Image 1 (cartoon, one colour):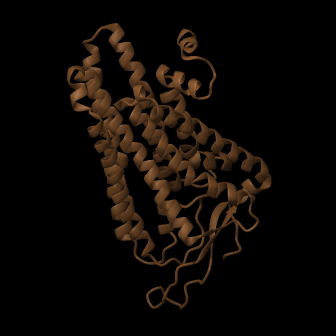
Image 2 (image 1 turned 60 degrees about the vertical axis):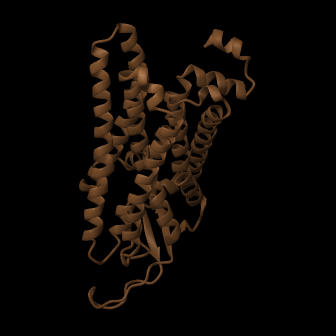
Image 3 (image 1 turned 90 degrees about the vertical axis):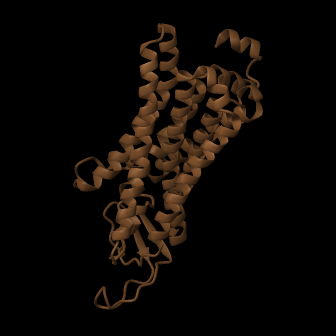
Length: 338
């Protein structure tokens, strides 16, 4: 069983479940998981180069936006601070995905430890969930700014901003920590994960004991994050739309320019989650192998690359400061050209 390879999968290297019956057996956790990348291995140097390039673009672009906001007091306003934390989350998610993928693409053994797999599970799920909570908080910020402009400064103080960000992260960390704790208690005797990275549901599927608690809590987290956060975000934008309908054309254009990037990010994140939830219910031959792999990793690639562009690069204040950091042009020239 441990020698089979049928696509992107993880094989357990360690002690198999002994005994002849599931009920009467004692189990030991595998010490290592060996990855098999299937068709990706055929041109692994091309894919490893692509992975490294994407990772470098993500690190440089997100770091530039974060540094520009951190170094200039004029950018230390609620909207920019939320953008900075969105970029920080993008860096965090990339760190939890790309190094694992790059090393295993080039490695002959393609081994990841069980502990490393659990760390990746925690990292990936906190990254995706924090993306949702931060977008919800950003929508709330835009709601207050557009619908209550006279009270915006008093409501969205820096203290409030950091409390909201802290609450968004703590909410996710607590929920995902419980999810992971429920997973690591499970004895594993399966061998195949149909992905090129570790996620919670794939590890749970390897268990040969009752996983009802994991399934129920997984549904609760799905409702509390994947369900609730987009609803709260859309409620904020519905109120913004209501106000915009009664405002001038110039006000509507400004509100649309501010809110459109948020809605774009929310849309492709929800689409990605729906793909992950629905795809296992269809035969693996429904979509081409390369498309399935891309869709499974797209939230780790597209979002961290687009955030500096759709949030940072489109905002004139951030563009100017980023150019200034790299010594491209004096600010006066940039103001005339941008």
